[in-house]
Amino acid sequence: MPFDTQEAIEAELQRVDGIRKCGKNAQFFEPFEPGYLRREVMVVPYLSIETTILLKQFLISTKHLKELFKKTAINHFFADLHAYAELVKEIDTIIDEDNQIKDTASTTLCKIRRQKKAIHKKIKQMLTTLLKKRPSIFTSSIVVERNNRYVLSIKSNFKTEIAGIIHSYSNSGETVFIEPIEITSDSARLLELNNQENKEIENILSKLTTSIRIRIEDIEHDIDAVITLDVLFAKVQYANDISATKPIFGSRFTIINSYHPILTDIMEYVVPLNLHLNSNKRILLISGPNAGGKTVVLKTIGLMVLMAKCGMFIPADEGSSLPFFDEVYADIGDEQSIESHLSTFAAHLKQIKTALSGKSNSLVLLDELMSQTSVEEGSALAAAIMEEFSRRKTTVMATTHNENLKIFVGKRDDMINAGMEFTDRPTYRLIVGIPQASNAIKLAQQFGINGGIIEFAYEYLDKEKMSLHEVFEDLSRELKAVQDERQKLSQLINDYESRIKDFSIFKKRELNQLKSKYKDELIYAKRTIEHLIKTLKKEGPSQDLVHKTRHFFKEKMDIEEPHQPYYPQIGEIVRLRDLKRNGQVIAEHQGKFKVSLANMYFWVDPKDIESVAEG
Image (tube, rainbow, N blue to C red):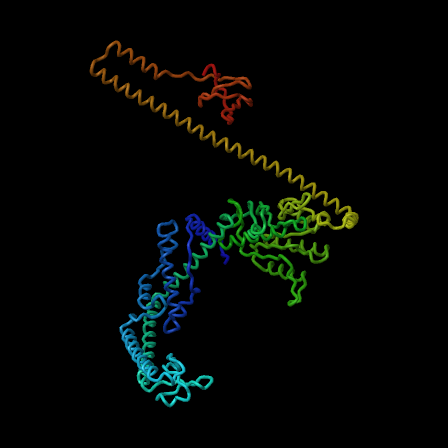
C-alpha cells in the first residue's frame, strides 16, 4: 500500500536498504490473516487441532528467524518476536506428529483410553468366537460397524440363529447386520467411554486455548511483524530481480536510465528513459510518432512514482530522484463503457474530472489528451485543462498529436514540450525541450501502405503543416547537436576533475615524503647536538671539536637565498621547485606558465620554476 507522507516512505526505504545490504534471504510462514486468531480465541471455547498446529508452526518459524538474523545488522527487526518456546512445548505434549491428541495429554484421558482398549479387545474376542462357531450362517467373516456399534453380517434366513439387536439390512435384503447379545453391554460401555474421551479432549484443548489466549496480543504482534517483514523481504527480492535502486526525493524529476520492468521480460533490449525536469516546469507535453513510446513513458513514470510511494526501489540508475506526490491519477487507454453508456470522450472527461477534484500536489498522467473530439474544440479544452492544473500547481504529463497544443505549451514558462525522437524510424528516446512531429505518413510508408496513398497524403497535407513539421525536425537536429556538445563538456569536466583529484593525491604524497625527509634530518641533528654536548662536558673544548661544531651548524643553518623568477621559452623543459619534478612549458598567460607533468597541467609563477641546468 502507498504511504501518505514522504517521511514514512523514506523510513520504509531505509528498512528495505538495510535488509538488502544484509544480503540474507528468509522464508516466512504466515498461516493467519491479521486479527483472525484473536477473534477465534475470543469466540470459540477452544481452537481446533488444525489451527493449533498452524500456530505451532508459526511460532517455530519465528524462532528460526530470530536465530538466523541474530548476529546481523538487521537483528532489530527480529528482536521483538516472541516465538514462545514454552507454548510450542505445551502443544507438543498434547498433540502428536499425526495431529492426534496424545494418550499422555492427561491422566484421565490415558485411563479412558486404556479402558477402551481392553473393551475393544474383549469384544473382538467374543465376535471371533461366534464367527468360528457357525461360519456357514455369515456372509462375511469381517466385523463391521453400524451406528457406532459392532455387528456381524448374517444371512437373512439365519437371522434368528443369533440373538441380538438388528441394526440394518443390505440393499439386496439378503444380509442382516446384528449386534450379538453377548457384546451389547460392552458396546454400550464403549460408547460411554467415547463420550468421556471427547469431553476430556475438549477440556485439554480448552486449557491449551487458555494458554494461547493469555498470550494472544504478543502472538498477534508477531503475526503483524512477520507479515511486515515478508513484505520488506519481497521488496528486496524484487529490487534484486530487476536491479532497482533506492529513489531520492527532491523537488524535480531526475530519472536516469529507467525502464519499465515488464518490457525487459519480453524484449531483449529496452531503450532507457532519461528525464530531467525542473520544479518550475510542472506540465510536460510529449509528442511524437505513433508506436514511438509516448504511452510507455507515461506508464514508466507513473509506475516509478507509485513504487516509490510504496517504499520500493525503482528501476533506474543510482541518483534518480522524484518529487513526492500525495496522489497519482492516470487516464491511459480507452475506457469506453457500454454498461455505463459512456463514449470514449465522456469516459476521458470523467477521469479528468476526478483528477481535478483531487489534491493539488498530485501527478496526473493523460494519454492522448482530448484527441477524441474535433481538433479545434479538443485543442481549446486541452489548453484550458492544462491551465487549470497549472493554476493548482499540479504536475501533469500528457501525450498528444495536436499541433495547436504544442504551440500553446511552447509559449508558457511553466510548461515544456518533449518528444519521442524519430530519425528514419522511432528511436524511443525522449527529447525534452522540443516537440516532435507525428510522422504518421512516414510510419504508414514503413508499414507498407500503398505508394499511391502515401503520395496523395503528402500532396493533401497542408503546406503550412509541412513547414511546421520541417521546423520541428530542424529544432530536433539542433537540440541533438546541443546535447552532444553538453555531453562533450560533461566529459571534459569529468576529465579535469579527475586530473585535479590525481594532482591532489600526487601533492599529498610529495608532502608526506618531504615531511619524512625533514623529520629524519631533525632527528639526526638532535642526536648530533646531544653527542657534541656530552663530548664538551666530558673532554672540554678542543680545536678539532670546535671546528666540527662550526662546520655542522654552518651546513644546517645556511639560509637559502630567495628564488629568482625564471622566464622559460614555450616548449622548454623546466624544474618545478616545490615538487622537484621536470615538466614542459606549453603555454604562457598573464605572467604565469602552464607546465605539463605526468599527464597533468599546472599554472605556476616564474619564481616556482627553474631551468633544468640550475636544478
